[in-house]
Image 1 (cartoon, rainbow, N blue to C red):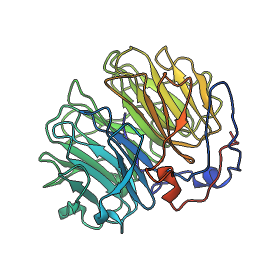
Image 2 (tube, rainbow, N blue to C red; image 1 turned 30 degrees about the vertical axis):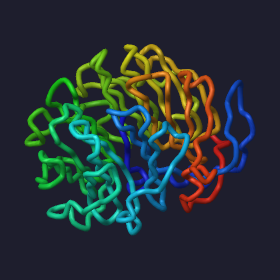
Image 3 (cartoon, rainbow, N blue to C red; image 1 turned 180 degrees about the vertical axis):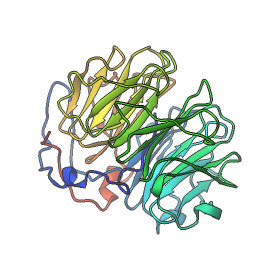
Length: 350
């Protein structure tokens, strides 16, 4: 599960702008009460099922009671557009955010205070950030021009890892079982490295080009998944070759992915029009939440039946594996996205 900086790097804003208002019940148990605005990304604290972060155009929000109440945090972030959020599994109070013009900012106190990483990232547009799932304090940041940066000390110092990509890096996935790092780009497909970014390879066929919005790794099967502008793709050889796995997806613009850590082959996809679920490793999909523009998904690792989705209507939550959904609101009664600064719309288009 991971978070992604789509708004700053060829994010399909034409799709976002084309949506029209329609917030009524759209199926058995599906509830979206009220109206909100776009939440750009969400991130779960891996050490606490009750702590979740949600980023909007006006700042970062935090809940410590699984979404029952929210508060805005990190006044240091007010002058930045937040494109991605990552939690360091080695030290969950440590957070990283990718920004449109401030590089990467880091927090050591659960998001209350932030400082710019500085160095080679100072002033850069960084679209995506990913923490090392092995919990070694490592973090990767992807920027324009195919520039990938790595820090091994929790974002205190950074080094650039030269990649063959010439366009923006839009997604990063780190194999928790090995040393492979896979990056997705906004028009040149995927690349991977097994030596910390010293050298890179790419597929010869599928995913050697095209826009990759999201990447995810399934520990149970060892498969990588890529959400693209042209559907969902699966790799069973750690990124060397890819096959299309989009059967059942009526919307092929896959912006978000989340893998269920408790069940092999169980995963979720968020698209520009709906949320989908698969129980067979992406070989087939069913729609579980229609009429949503989904920017990020997260699964509670301690209770995988609990799902969160960042959407154009705010953050929504399911406690039964996606059968029913409810909106999450601020302590003031508002959804986090009510303060997002984006127009209120709905996703009635595919």
